[in-house]
Length: 235
Ligand code: ATP
Image (tube, rainbow, N blue to C red):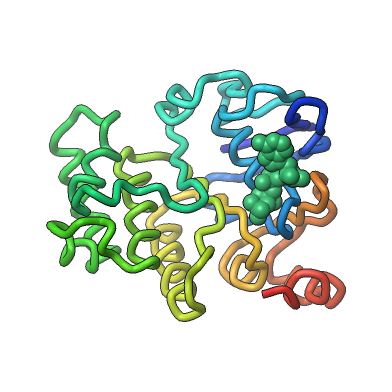
């Protein structure tokens, strides 16, 4: 569904990603783990068209999206939840969700998406008239995910969904991601919290200094003592 081939991304002369290759198949839940500064956000921003200076190829299904504008990439069906969520805190929960549906013209489809998301996240239904800024961190992350899903994307990309959340809330959030995967969504997320990402994803890549240094089934990577020492100690 998504294929990145030999991608190098630059900030001026700095090469933040070095020959990164990865792929995500339909209905897979794939994670990319790596410590602070490894290049995780740079990878997502490169896929979403926010970083222009790059070499290599990015394909979404059969479309070359390497040099497309961000709006075009969203329109093709790639949903994105950026780092720090960036919801509209002054608007209500419902208004935030409506904003997420801006590319959908069919009112019935918008209603259907809303009902599906309220089923998965009943707390958002309960709070739909409240200002989004009044929600807890975990609820805001659920809202950010739901807002991205309102446009019926085929794949959801997420930047560190666990950031700033308490362990119990992180588990609750990943349980919701499992429900979405079971409903047929393809998920690709980047995380510093390696343990939770490996526990819930099907496959994972490990990024270090802009390079993929390891990849495999998440359940197998969870057995890799060296990896655990390097990444799981830092939680
Ligand atoms: P974090 O968990 O802190 O978000 P990350 O793995 O997402 O880390 P990136 O933010 O992608 O890492 O950063 C990768 C490298 O690129 C780092 O060395 C960082 O200093 C550098 N970098 C990131 N953004 C810029 C920028 N706008 N200009 C110059 N260098 C940048």
